[in-house]
Image: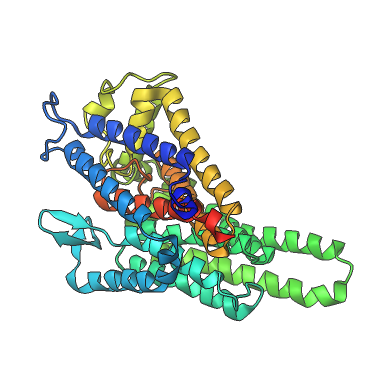
Length: 426
């Protein structure tokens, strides 16, 4: 056997085992959240757990196909894969199927396919391809704008389909840009805008502007070149005023009622007890039931398929976006901690492998994988526990759905293949 053929089978089994544990444990919780009565057949296609088991079986086919292709295939055809993914998103406006108010699926017989799940790995490939180009320099504005355009295009297309949750995922690529040389000022601006937006809604525009003025004045006072920084400080203050008013106007006139209510409940903006109670019944019902399910699990949980709120179907969409509440109720703190450890271990492992890559393409793609998984995991678990506003976003490898499971599997195993080829990249 040749050296190349031997090294091609040196896949990172730590990553693969973590993936198998997450998918398997996810299926157990899907079965618990979706079963009705005694389970007679695990492959019962009338039940969600039966369908998901088939989805898992098809993942094996995808994995074999991904690992059998040459690693260079993904770099060579990254642009074509990205274009095809964008065309699939555009096609939804003509051939798409409306589900829960979002036009994000293609109907294929009795099944639905969500192309936004596949657009994630396609965008990660396109970003890796562009940033590994010898002519790309993330310190120049031209290349920064081009890189941002790659992630903005799918984000806008998905947002127009009324799927704000999936749109948020594309912010993950700013971590990739930062790793590849994007100046810290951009990350500081991103974090500052988030804080400024929250302050504007929570405490009002006036208090926010006064706070900004105080902070800017302190910074100006301690700067040595005060003449040069005076104009800069004034411009920053002016931008803060405009942005603060803009956030308030967008919240009041740009968001839909249910979106306003979710943010209002999260920031506790509503003071009228009657309106607040009505909002809780309508917009926060899922969250309240999810929190009750998690808290009822205690330290060790009620036991597999023994959760009263899970089996009683108290939590809507529990097998999809709220699957983590099943873990909390039936497996308790121990089970929830186990899931968190698995995700953290997987993300850290991908980052570790990404840093060991010999090619920039593989490294950038690895950071894209880790960033996407991190955003999904953080937003989903934070949403289920009420730490952030309710956003429709699945938990990777856990939530029910063929498109999501296949998309995340492809995303991860392309990197597994790229990592297996790093020895040949010397």
